[in-house]
Amino acid sequence: MAQTSMVINSDYGDWSWSSDAGERARLLQSPIVDGVPKGEEEESGATNGATTSTLGAVFIVVNACLGAGLLNFPAAFSTAGGVAAGVSLQIGMLVFIISGLVILAYCSQASNERTYQEVVWAVCGKLTGVLCEVTIAVYTFGTCIAFLIIIGDQQDKIIAVLVKESEEAVNTPWYTDRKFTISLTAFLFILPLSIPREIGFQKYASSLSVLGTWYVTAIIVIKYIWPDKEMSPGDIPTRPTSWMAVFNAMPTICFGFQCHVSSVPVFNSMRQPKVQTWGGVVTAAMVIALCVYMGTGICGFLTFGVSVNPDVLLSYPSNDVLVAIARVFIIISVLTSYPILHFCGRAVLEGLWLRYKGQMVEEDVARERRRRVLQTVTWFLLTLLLALFIPDIGKVISIIGGLAACFIFVFPGLCLIQAKLSEIEEVKPSSWWALVSYGVLMVTLGAFIFGQTTTNAIFMNLMA
Image 1 (cartoon, helix red, strand yellow):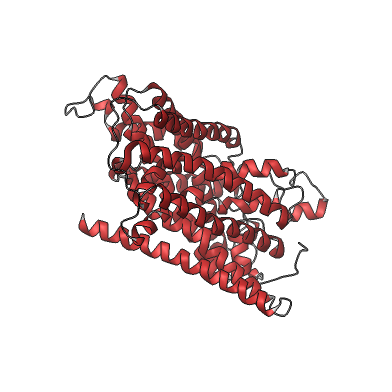
Image 2 (cartoon, helix red, strand yellow):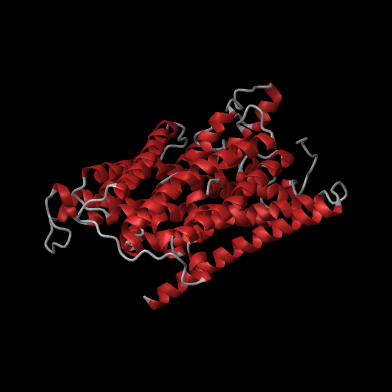
């Protein structure tokens, strides 16, 4: 597709804080993609920032998509009302998920921006851009809480075997207490990994996370084919109780497939960043992710039925060695993913602060270091405290799943609408109306998922 000379709300001068600090701040660059700042690339003609092959881009997108969210897919199938409803819902949503990724690539190419929030800012304007950045910060904050809860869940099962105590025991040693084990692990591993300014080294650990994800899926499939004698499934529904039950599973699916925020840097890192090529990349990547999630969701759901835990690994016996290895893989995955998510959230907050102060990133290194340490420690302590007192991973996933719907549906839909409105003289009326209508549908669907999730969260808290 030829690059369009579209310039929509791209004048950062209309932002009343700083005219260039926000653009120069390196916000939310993918730690897997080693990119060259676009200004330097244009001046020097360097191409080492665009060295990702098509196959490599597929792997990176799959890497960004797969993660600890797969643990919740069996419960999503149970919520949706069975295998048929769960599979149909995933396939139906995949159309919007892939189209959202393509829309973001098109708008990135047209606006010449290299990150998700910069694309939204350039295409949709300052108000939507700031809203997008705030949403990213809240989403990454909530995901970090979920990661800490997952660590606690897996450690509880592992420790129960190591100290040879029953899960129902009342008097347990203080060092096996959930709050202590989560805090110890977080202070020893997560905090030191979160403080550095750059986290490029995490790209090596991310490969291990992907292998761990595949191993978890393989174990769940194997345990379904050859189940343990002590595992007995509950009722297995074959149809949803209501249409609302199907929609209640959508936040979990959004959380699992959300890779849109990191997709824009991946697209710009490709040797030939063409929208048509990118469409093939994301289609292949999402089909791979779909197979993994469907394998986990179907086999996990059929193994335990409606009694499946929101974290499916918690449904298996503590003394199962193969499952214990899966728990270790999940812990490693989460330990390496938390700093990446924190880095993204911290970068957004840093960019907002720089715009407000009208400062450059490199203006005061010492002050930046103090601010970074303060932001990191504050973020870390708040997520840790909330994780210690919110033991139910399902509640957190439902909330951040609603936010993930904004990245998949709402912001890409708004970008599509605004892009087509700016090109109204160049686009055929029929095509223009079709694309704008599709954008409106995406925004409406995303807003519905987010609104429903927020309403359910408030209702559950009031009932509690």
